[in-house]
Image 1 (cartoon, helix red, strand yellow):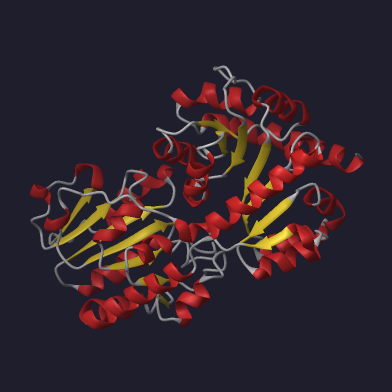
Image 2: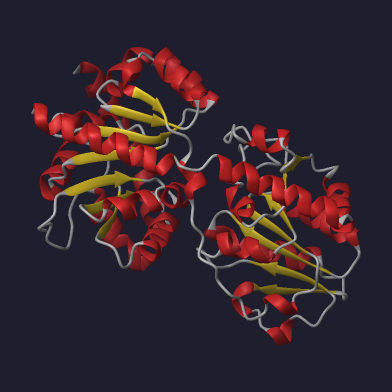
Length: 422
């Protein structure tokens, strides 16, 4: 009791500083809904004929990972899906527009707010994804309904942090009824934090179960080939990738998709400045791209739309995964693998331990910024190697699928058992 009180006090003090910033950084048309939902107020009735399950997926990556899981559950349940980020909201709206899924912002982790939301929606279960540990949410939900954590992972950095507060985190984690985790290593870390082993199942990574809609782009056949796509980039990776691409000095296209939409303008200015003295290179935002704009022999394209990156990988020859040339830990490499594309990553992919298998099976090449140009050149010039690396990536991807079905089976069995006992 005392532990949660101190946590709530610290949380409220932090909120005083961060809430105004979070409010004003959002577009004006979102602010009213955001602040109301953060405090547990909603502009629509909660009644429905089917029981509800509340699922929390923090942002785009988590939403994509649980898409098939949610669609299958929605056959028998209404879903309340919470996210934290605006981009997560947008992708969720697009993914579930024809499904019984109500999308909300995750309420503040304050006891009276959490209690209000639980009473309003009255879900039969709460399902958290990956590493979303919210102490008050878990505490008060677990007093009413079973709480599950699916597609779970605990990075080495998070594990070290949690170990320092094991006295606090152990009780919270043991309020969760079932853990479905991605790797054996994550199971070991949970046990070390005090979670009962019988609660933990290694089900695999649900991100391997993605199904990507094939979007056709009117300009795709007119782009100068080869096409290099750098997905989910962070500062200053755009410069690193631009440097390597410009050294190719052959007819070609570079497509860059920044990880965060709020950086679109910043990256556009950076790119234009970087090539301002290069008359042989044409720049365009993808929103302005048309067949008439791709007559130049060299083209740089900024992806200024969300929700299309997964499909864009289909048109490229080589995929560079962002977040991996800086100590961020990398972004999801599975979308290019889905399309049989050779994957190139920087040395910092520690958020995705499964990348080791891709490297071992020669489906991914790990390079630093100095070697990026030579690897791009080799893949572009050696068609056989390019195709082989892409096929290897797809083979590993296919082999590791199936986590969604395993997770649904475990969650449904556990949910049934819970209501039989209670």
